[in-house]
Length: 206
Image (cartoon, rainbow, N blue to C red; front, side, top):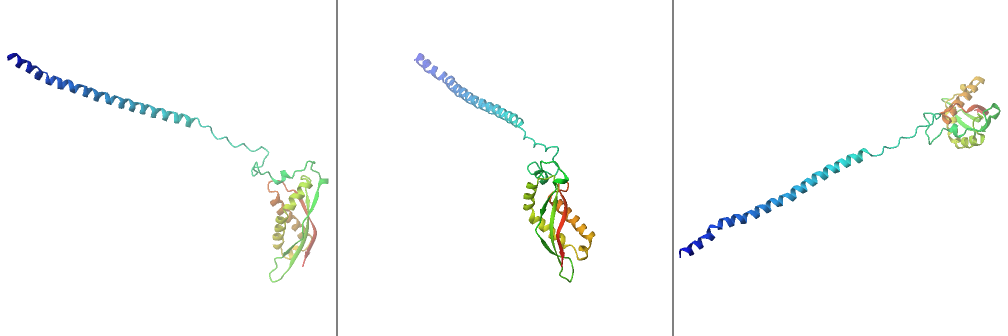
């Protein structure tokens, strides 16, 4: 009977050890489950750092926008590359000479004179004396297109005159010079005057 009791006591004495042994695998499994998360976190940090570095590298290597080409040395400051001055477009191939001067007729213009209390008007028909530096063919086409502008400029100029300012040789020469300057300033602002003079075909005051 004593042997049987001892035999029964052995399993009870080993019970705590078995419970401790049963707990060890669980603790070991818990430690093993943390390791993959640590590895994943490390990979994410490394990948983020690598991505930031590549982004800066590509940003620094972006090609710079090409600088706009400088205008030619002989191009006026107010003239753009795609819109050349009228004088350059109309330039003649023949060398400039007094013998190359040509003429262009404008349509008659009637304007009221600046006379308070009276209706007085002037009728003027002009001929432009053009420089031989521009081609007659190109120049005539250019002036035909500009006729509305020239008519408007001439009407405004004449409307600023009074009867007294239209009388006498000196006044007529002054009118010719003023009209010539007005036309040149509007048609050829970036070049020397290409209208050499204004000829009066008709200048009647009524």
